[in-house]
Amino acid sequence: MMNGDILIVAVFTVTVINIARYVSSLRALVVMLRDANPLLYQQICRRESNFFTLSPQGDISRQKRLYQYIRSQEYLHHHDVAFVGKCNKVRHLFTLNVALSGALLATFFLVAFAGW
Image 1 (cartoon, rainbow, N blue to C red):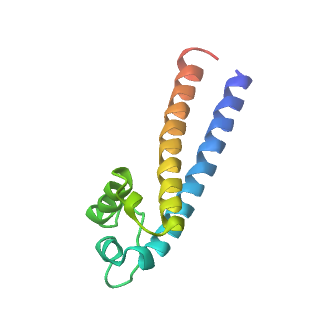
Image 2: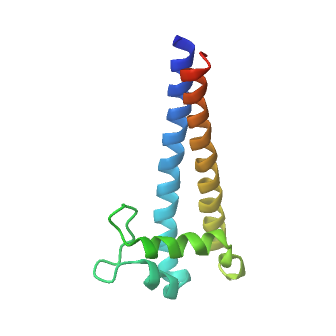
């Protein structure tokens, strides 16, 4: 049973590290967004603090707008290569984190029910 616990800890650690990378890249993207796309920045950032929050208490419609922008790849037509690269990185990290979260759930299932 010890091997299953080690597997869960390993997958969990990789998932947490990648979530931290994603949040860090997303915050850097929002900072770049101020200069690269001021209209979108105004749409997603709070007017009183000019800061995008990733908390559940934040305005979900603002967070959803940024998610749709990145998901639909609207940034590909932007003239700033660094901004397009950062958007691509955030998009890939999001996809990676979804896959890692699925792998973590699968690992929990395998260890708990399949007896690994």
